[in-house]
Every structure is written in structure tokens, then in C-alpha cells.
Amino acid sequence: MSIQPRILSALRPQFRYARVALPSRSRPMSLLPQAAKAGFSSSVLHRKDQPKAAHPSKHESRPLRSGEPVAEHVKEDESKRAGLPEEPMEGPPPLYSSATSHHLDRGPIAPLAALSAHELFFLKNRTILITGGGRGLGLTIAHACLESGASVRCMDLLPEPSQPQWKLAEDLARSKGLQISYHQLDVTDQDQVHQVFSDLFATNSQETPHQPIRGLFTSAGIQIMMSALDYSTEKFRKVIDVDLTGTFLCAQAFAKEWFKRHPDMDGRAGMEGASIAMTGSMSGHIANLGIECAAYNASKAGVNQLAKNLALEWSKKGIRVNTLSPGYIRTALTAAQLEEKPELNKIWLQGSLLGRLSTPDEFRGPVLYLLSDASSFMTGSDLLVDGGHCAT
Ligand SMILES: NC(=O)c1ccc[n+]([C@@H]2O[C@H](COP(=O)([O-])OP(=O)(O)OC[C@H]3O[C@@H](n4cnc5c(N)ncnc54)[C@H](O)[C@@H]3O)[C@@H](O)[C@H]2O)c1
Image 1 (cartoon, rainbow, N blue to C red):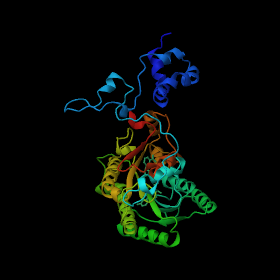
Image 2 (cartoon, rainbow, N blue to C red):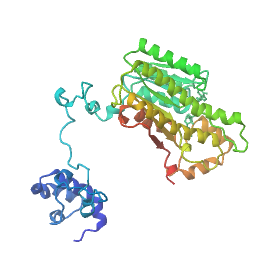
Image 3 (tube, rainbow, N blue to C red):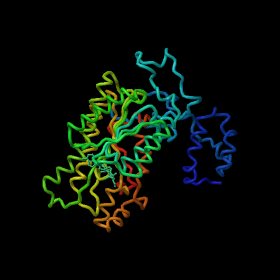
């Protein structure tokens, strides 16, 4: 029976695993049940031209001359993948003996390996600060942080946070023995920002030292839809002030307070470092069909670029900085836009590969990822979560 190339490529993962995971003589037999399940004739597995061991370390090293392709042999036999160790790791993650795995007495080299995969996403034993935490995406993320084990401090321009969501968050915090508090703050006011952040860090050190502040999620933002020709300087600056400058001021205040308390931290992953996740937008990457909002989009592009620069300055000192770029979310912000221009709904849906707008809860996973140790090697980067909008 001839095997169609298409079928072969669909089953390639089984083949690769079989080739490398088992001693060559036992391979075909061990593979039989798996191959039968996959609808394969066992004769296929005995083909003489099956490639041998694929681990790169098993190839003779060869001297390289300038201009030569480094991974030439990949063309000859695609199973020999340069640089990719294909042999599965056996057994549990490595245990750390002080003799082999400590680096200059600065702790284990891979401290996160001791955590199970799902524990990586926990925010236990820490406090997260959230701007724009009075409603919308910010308040949803406050819930998610509490669910994941963190205490939260929400800041917003609103005199009071949105109900009933705030009450639900308070109930959740109480039920888990965590803390939640609300602080009115204008993120564009540098003195106020520094005062509030300084107070929060000081109170936290005194009252909940077992839950140190280790994360900031910036969600405060405004949007003004307006033709570029009509913007007054004041209106343009207002958007840049809140969305970009406000994000910067909060990140700056956070970093100042954090570095004061952690002067000797380095870029080691997780466990003790801090993470700043800033809300950018897919609008920082594209211009949105159907709406005119040059200031907003410029501000969000600025947030993406800001994060890269802060990451450059702060990552080696212990603070990772990344952005989240959401697509359209159903919140008060978009509700106002849709009310002003109902035809937007259709235009926005056309751009979504999923054929729908998102809801704030869909960003809990991405933000928990950015704030937690799960993203320990990610900094200066952007997480685009837009239902595929920017893919076309
Ligand atoms: N809704 C969307 O489709 C969408 C898409 C991409 C990105 N975003 C971004 O997500 C973030 C949250 O937006 P949202 O949809 O939850 O909107 P939202 O209006 O519900 O929330 C924004 C919050 O920011 C607060 N805020 C505004 N100005 C402030 C200031 N000067 N100081 C402090 N707080 C201030 C508001 O009071 C509000 O609570 C924003 O940065 C927004 O640009 C939203």
C-alpha cells in the first residue's frame, strides 16, 4: 500500500518520537499499537530508509567555513534538526544540589523548575497594583488576581468603583483571606501618583509583608473619536497624557519604590522579581477601520515602545516590562463608541477572524501569564490578543 505524502506528514510526530525515544531494535514492536491506532501498516515502520538517531549531538561536528550553511544536513534528512534536542527528558525536573546547581551563591539556577506547570500561573504571596481598576478591564483583572491568590490595590479617577463588581471582588477577597482596597488617583498627576504609590508600598511593607508588591497592571485609559483635522491641541494632549504619560508615570513610581526595597535584585527569573504589564492595544499596531482616533492609536503605539525601553532599563534589575495589546472588548469604553456610531459593530466584526468582539474575562489568562512567573523569560515584548484582527 502506498502511503500518501499528506498522511505521512500528519503522522510525523509519532514517527519522530519513535525514532528517538526507543533503542533502534525495539522501535518497530513498541510502535505497533500506536501505529495500528493511527491506521498504519506496520511494514511502513520497517522501511530501510527510515532515518537513524536524530539527536544533533550524535553527528560528527564539522569545521565551518564562512559562507557555508550551518544546518546544511537539514536538507538531506529533515529529521536531523540542527540544534533541537529531540530526545525526551526522562523523570521529574532536576533536583538542586548545592554543589552543582547554585550560581555564585545566588540561589538555584532554575528555581522555577521546582513549581508544577499550573503553579507558575499563581500569584500567591504577592500584591498587585492596578490602575483603571475602578471598572472595565482593570476591575476584571482585579478579580482574576484575587482568584489567583494575590491581594490587590486598585486605583482609578472614579470617586467610587463600579458596583456590583466591586462588592463581588470584596467578597472574594474576604473569602480567601486576601486584601483589596480602592484609591482615587489621576494617573496624569505626577505628584499624586508618586504619593499614592509611596503610601501603598509603605503600608504594604508594614501590614502585609508576607504579600510584597510584585506587580503592576496599567489599565487606565481614555479614547476620543475625532477626525485628525478637528483635534485641538488640548484634546490631543489629553489622550496622550492619560494613555501614554499616565502609564509612564505609574510605571516610574512603581519602579522607584520597588528598587528602593530591592537594590540588589538581578534579572533572575521569577520567585522574587516584579512584573509590569501595560495595556496597549491592537490599535497601537494598526489604524482601525470605521473610527478616526489618531491620538489614541499614537498613544498606544507609544505604550508598546515605552515598555521596550523600560524593559531595557529595568529587566536586569528585576522588573520585567511587557504590554498586552487587546482587540475590541465589550466595555464602557467601546459601548460609548458603539452608541455614537452603531454601524461600527458590523465593521469591527468583519475584521475579527473569530467573528466576534471579546469580553473582559478573556484577558484574565493573558494578564495572569504576564504578571506571573509563567512569563519569567518574557520582557520588552507585546502579547497581542485580538481575535486575529491584525493577522489580515
Ligand atoms: N475596550 C476595548 O475595546 C479596548 C481595546 C484595547 C485596549 N483597551 C484599553 O484597555 C484599557 C481599559 O479599557 P476599558 O475598556 O476597560 O475602558 P474603561 O473606560 O471601562 O476603563 C478605563 C478606566 O480608566 C479610568 N481612567 C480614565 N482616565 C483616568 C485617569 N486620568 N486616571 C486614572 N484613571 C483613569 C477610567 O475611570 C476607567 O475606570 C484602556 O487602556 C483601553 O485603552 C480597551
